[in-house]
Length: 332
Image (tube, rainbow, N blue to C red; front, side, top):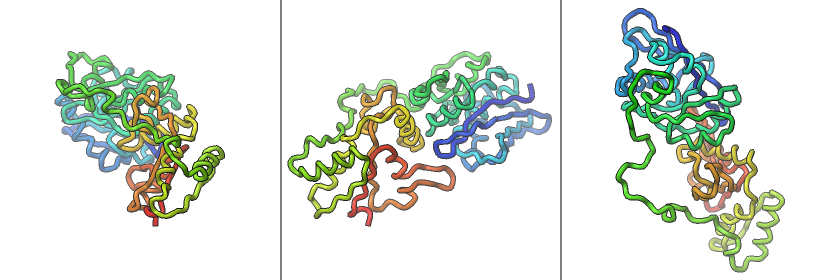
């Protein structure tokens, strides 16, 4: 069929909007047009998708191809639309089931070799897909654990565009590929005990400072702000880093919110708790209150958050439901 559609998610902070990805094939000279307010990174997806489809063994049509991202008034950004664009184009050409493609949300960046690369923000994107009524989401294999945190949605991890096409009924032979982000075959195994980060600092390790410890306990119990005054070396930083250890585990709702915020950062793919211990948070949810201590050279945008192309949470936002420590020697 010359027209097909599927869906993706456009993120605005932790809020997601469903984007309908329409692909139309018409008579004319070979061309690939992408419309619907894409940013620079998304505009380059035409070359990524074309090369990825060719190297995956399912090349795009040689006719005039137009892809529209609707609603057209909503600005789209990032490379997470690549998979949806490729699937819609293949469905329009009849290379896979258009009905199956239209019933799912597709998230992921495509490499030139056809593999699907992980992207930030998978957790809030899958939550937005579930809220919109979708029951199936195709995500990069490296993001599958994070996407599985959302109940009520079938998460289909895909390693390549060929894999996604086969899932939608394409008549292609499966080809095994190493997922992006997976361990290299033949690499030496690592003892899990050696990769476990240091445990959360414990207030029980502090000797003396009874009044300061009592102040920390009061602040933790009541959710109060705390100002510590003293000469350098008095132990202010040491005490502050132990304040999260006095706080209770996050509730389910808080854990989802904190994990969504971490998911928006490049280093925040779910799978580790705030202490960096993979075993500290079941199924990848961050269960412990986060601790943020901005560097003294941090800009206002780094502390508050923002951005012109993609909204990135700052230190204040990343400290949600946790502790934000502003050292006077750093924040002068």
